[in-house]
Length: 441
Image (cartoon, rainbow, N blue to C red; front, top):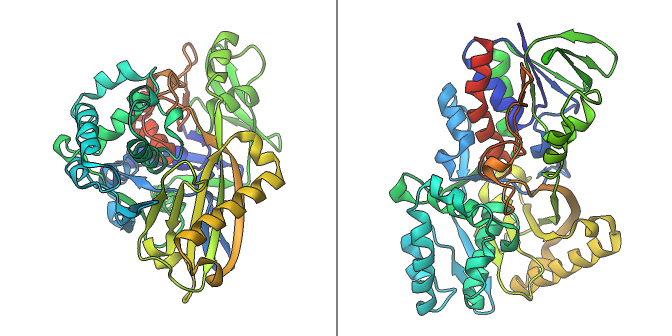
């Protein structure tokens, strides 16, 4: 029997790759004409633009890379390290610490504050993953609010890099797990990476090629109307063009709270369960702008403007990470900031934020305005908060199976997993694979 997977994003493709590596027949259905889900990129004026800024956290220790390694295709994905990172404050540039030991050299904050910072971070970095679960209902700001402004700015920058969000939206438990995964003394690493050939969805393309090589199939431009459940068992699904497909094994790889509302007849899923999962449907938003320049204004790869006076929370020099994203003689930057979801509905507010970011970047880099070729603003309302907000992390998320229904599985960053975004989606696949294999056997 073929295993049918809905969604060709990171969650669906990592699940498909893990299953085909075991010899199972997999068919993936994707409603878009492109692979990658929320990582899908596009070509604009000969530049490769990502759908937001994506980065592989902790590099070879990441969940995505571990999937590549497990199925033996890690050599197919050429990655560029992202390690030239800096803060920018009113006192200039300050190097971003690559590890715990670098904190004593952190010029962003006074030496006395560095000692206090070490006292705060060391217990986190050397605790156990199990212990961090006790902190999942606490906000990170519960332990940072008494710190000086410079040290708070450090936490804000770390949260932007690790979670693409502000510290008040991060649980203490999730932040501590990030510290553990970045601690070399616990087998971790603080390295980050991005596909060397440009476009974060190239990760998905490598996975898709592997699935097809192993005999699996991927159908794009197709969507599902309903999943059939009879006598508490999955029996198949109906496509948008009313084809009826029989199967006893289905994997859903897009936000569970959407899937439960869209893919099942009323009454199939327990209403109390649906209500619980709907509470996970909390989103943050960002305004991001791609800028193309005719000159390189910095050799760094990422800078974090720190301080309450900055609207811009991160500036990523994409073509400094890999020149493959831009044509010769041009350079690509993306700047971003988290916003309230309502901001994305106001074109004037978006315009005001973009203008403010341009002013701030020009103040840091005097050549920015004169070298600007074009800009492309974007406002995203689909940045999931369920991976990191207090009370909605890790084991509080959607389970990989609904109790009482056989043959139905859920993967993706809205399901039980740790991390953020694409890495969380890959981790959910790793956790779900044994459950699927048990069902198939």
